[in-house]
Amino acid sequence: MKKKVNFKFTSKHLYYPFIWYQYHKLFFRSLVFRGNKLWAFKFLCNLKYELKMHEGLEPFWVFLVALLKVTPEVLLFPKKRGGGLQWIPLPISERKQYTFAVKWVIKLLKDKFRLVKVSTVADTLIGAIYGRGLSIEKKNSVHAIADLNRHLVRFFR
Image (tube, rainbow, N blue to C red):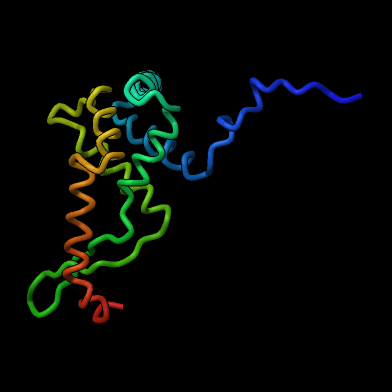
């Protein structure tokens, strides 16, 4: 006898890729700067609601696409050469890419009192999807400097 499958619980939305899990975990951990996990959980729930209201799509996919757009491929590392400090672009691992994408978004959102508002996070993530905002400007500036300094990589391998 064939078992009846309940499609409510086996939808494709329950199977998110590993990348989404990494971003979500890092984002949650970086929100717990107050030491209050309950506050961070409520914040994440409110953020999901805001993203759903703004875009009308599944909020997890909006979150994933936004952070994938912010993820850097290279980072600049300071090295001393000839008495001066030069920024050398070096590729980074996938784990560091996740970490820096989340760090940039969180750092840009905290004000001097270390407060993060749900509406500003949602606006920043949605702006990142469409290629505007501070997080995209940060990524573009890092990549522009890396492009200018790519000739220095051969000295520091």
